Length: 146
Image (cartoon, rainbow, N blue to C red):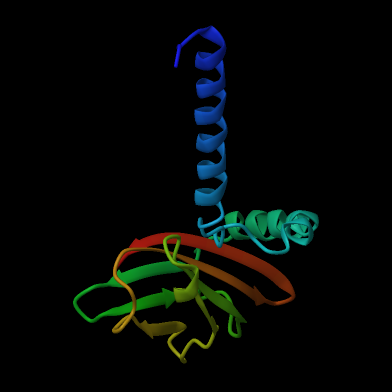
């Protein structure tokens, strides 16, 4: 068999097509769980989120999120200017969407909520607290490492 430029082009395109097919096959195995399922609705609700961020910046004493590693707990200390708060705490694990979970805001009489971290996946977490008090919404996000 004689190897000429036509054979070279055919071999090149065959290898190119096989490489593309392999890339497409490999990309179907990739987990896209870090993308929000309802990203369009999230985008439309951004103005409400922005208003919560502005309200949070206007507080004299903000929400404090403390990672107490020795006690294996996260401590949320709410501002003393509010007597009653409610909302949601969202624990987001960027490396594993199956580890994410949500809790209700339930501070004690001392305005502190303690959340045990024993048994949680070790690594980077984002704690997102979306809470309301006196008719206003507030939002605080903190990155912690367990």
